[in-house]
Amino acid sequence: MSDPTYVGDILLIEDNPGDVRLTHEMFTEAGMYGTHYVANDGDDAVDFLHRRGDYGDAPRPNLILLDWYFPNTSGRTVLQAIKRDASLQHIPVVVLTGVLSEFHDLQSEQPGADAYVLKPIEPADLRRIVDEFSLGQELV
Image (cartoon, rainbow, N blue to C red; front, side, top):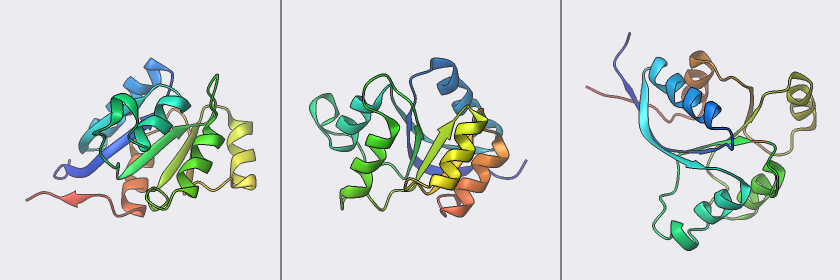
């Protein structure tokens, strides 16, 4: 394996603990590391990104991995909030979905995310995303 790649602060917006664990494992398998933050639903994600409540000191992530469906505030609503905010809209957002038909719908609809990935996310997909958004910095 090549040298580890630092990817900075990653915000994973995901309500399934198993998917959270798998995503962390995929970063490790892909040889990438950084600080991972998790928002368990759309409401927490919006609070994190706007630094409200318990998230007053939250960092600005270098990448947002966004699940699409939540019981309350949807991924679509979170994505719209990100893209409307001048302080957030530069952050790459990758929409994650576990349903193939939904994945195809999102790709054709293109609701404004920077990329769309079918879950479970694979190490090669993560590497492609990091490379595409120039997040990785090789360590020497």
